Every structure is written in structure tokens, then in C-alpha cells.
Amino acid sequence: MSSQNFIKEHYDTKVVEALKKSRGYTNVYQIPRIEKVVLNMGVSALLDKGVMEESVKNMGLITGQRPIKTIAKKSIANFKLREEMPIGVKVTLRGERMWDFLLRLIAVALPSIRDFRGIPSKFDGNGNFSLGVTDITIFPEISVDSIKRQSGLEFTIVTSANTDEEGYELLDLLGMPFRKREEQDETSNDETAA
Image (cartoon, rainbow, N blue to C red; front, side, top):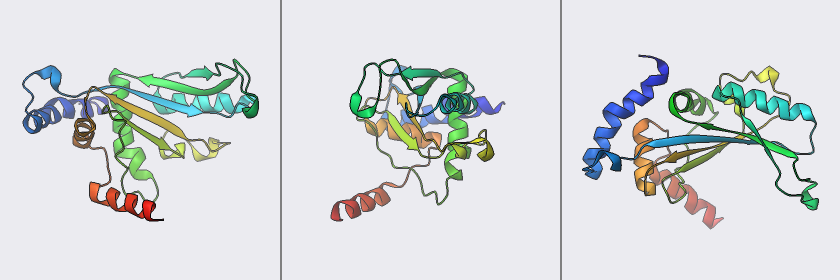
């Protein structure tokens, strides 16, 4: 069994059965699944061209797929942004590359964050999960010495779940290291009290 298929096989054998039991799905098409993973890295438009090329190279190393450059749709004077100016890179992963990325994210990248205590489980209301990472050197493909400029990465895991609870249960069963719900409630209460 290859490493790329491990998490997919885990989904097919264990997660699907667990979701059927807990949610009482009668049709196989009701069971939530991961449709795609979208990664995005913003790059300041005022920086030199080398920064954009470095971002393209790093995103390609992380995902194993060549990213596309995103460009500004219109000019905004306050941000010194001109139309057609490159402002970032993005990649959409599906199939084997998606499962491979999820395995590396869950098993290697997230646990290597310093003082890691889990990630917050904030969903968008439709069962999709988004998270931002401030340091891309958590991925083993990125060498710390090759980074000239610190950059972050945002990714969205798009699921076929209809509710946040279904999306949470799907990702939790796949092994996503969420913070426990009680801890999240305490931190949100502390933030509102401050």
C-alpha cells in the first residue's frame, strides 16, 4: 500500500462505515467526502519579481503541481495595485495529489508547529474548512535555508457535507488534529472577556 493511498483507503474502509453508523445514511451518495483542496499564497505586488518566482517554486514543492499566478482584476490606488499585476499563486488539488497532501498535512506538517495544541474547528457554514499557516517551513519539502522571505499559506478543504457538524466529523475521523471543543469554548470566552 503506497503512502498516497493510505488516507484514501482509511476513508473508504473506516470513515465511511463510521459515518454511516453515526448519521444513519441510507444512500452511499449522502456520505460526505472531500472534493478538493484549494491552496492560496498571497504575494505583495510591490515586491520584486524574484519573490513571485520563489512563491511559485515553493507552492510547486508543497503540492507537487505547478501553481497558477493570480492577478489583480482592477486597480486600487490606496494599495498601489494596478490591473493585471500578479498578487499571488494558487493550486487546486484533486484525486491522488489531494490525498497525498492531506496525509502530509495531518501526519507531518501540522504536528511540527511549535507548541502545537490542535487547530480551531471553524467551518464556513457549508461543511468546508479553511486554515491559514503563517510559516511554510512546517512542510518538509521546504528548506529553511532556501527561504528568502517569510510567507504564509491558506488552504480550504472543500467537502460535500451539508452542515458544519458533518464536515467536522468527516475531518475528525480522517485524523485532523482539532482542538477539543471545550478548549475552544474557553479560549473564545477569554477573548470576549478581554
